[in-house]
Image (cartoon, rainbow, N blue to C red):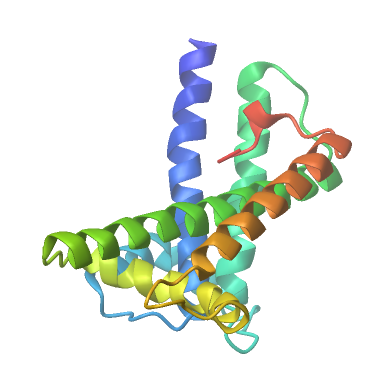
Length: 196
């Protein structure tokens, strides 16, 4: 029963945490809020963020209320997972550090898999002449594009082939390795951290 409970908390908690982080990304990249997927993300996170908004105003493009809510969800997930496993409550400083590492891990995964999906869909469109239109595809393009732009300036396209995603993939891999080393030195227990 303990294993099932932990699986449910980690799966559903990780999914909700990814939605919370996507809410932060929506404003950061100025994505289309009228996109159907964006509307779902906003609705799923609206109530707690509205409670935090009066004390946590936006800092430019950063939705600080959404970011703090994401951190709180991550901390709560760690504490609930620890209780399920039978550990004592995790030290607040450790749970905060683990939460930030978990959020970084989810963020890197969103960019990695989002970039992979955008590339595959662009290939299918270019090679097969398929027209794929879904709200999530447009939103994923809007989220990924700002992260690709710096790499496109470094490595321009050669003969119509854009090689900049290779640099972005490599950067994500390096950041994941660094994150893993920091997590190890911080004593992070992967089974307790949402999305890790």
